[in-house]
Image (cartoon, rainbow, N blue to C red):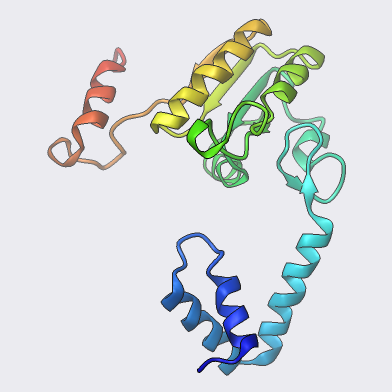
Length: 197
């Protein structure tokens, strides 16, 4: 029988996405069996992050001050605003693209069944932001899921009302993909959005 402290550690690790009981148990034992200093460092890192990290007042990504480094950077273009679902999406775009504009992070997507509406995504804040800092283009970079598409349409309405041109990330066949292995919906979407060469 596990001790109360061990059980609490396992239950805490289960809160991580994609971590079930067995994985949480393995993680707990690894932390306890290994170098205890590493486990203590992890605990200090989590504690420090919880105490210091908040949301940027302008774009809503994670930061340690009122504004994040991107919003404070005068080198970033104020002409474009990219709307993403999560800070992880922002990070992925920063790593993979040469995008030099600003961002707005929704922290989710519209899902009425889960109680996630426009207010929970900060969409009123997005409308206020576009009124205060007009942009020429809003790039909608939500995921191509049913909820992501609904969110994209809602964001597009707000951007259009703010006078911005709205663009959407292209979706379709991945680089290196083979047509015979691509699912029907992706293939249909890619075919419908084909470009002139």
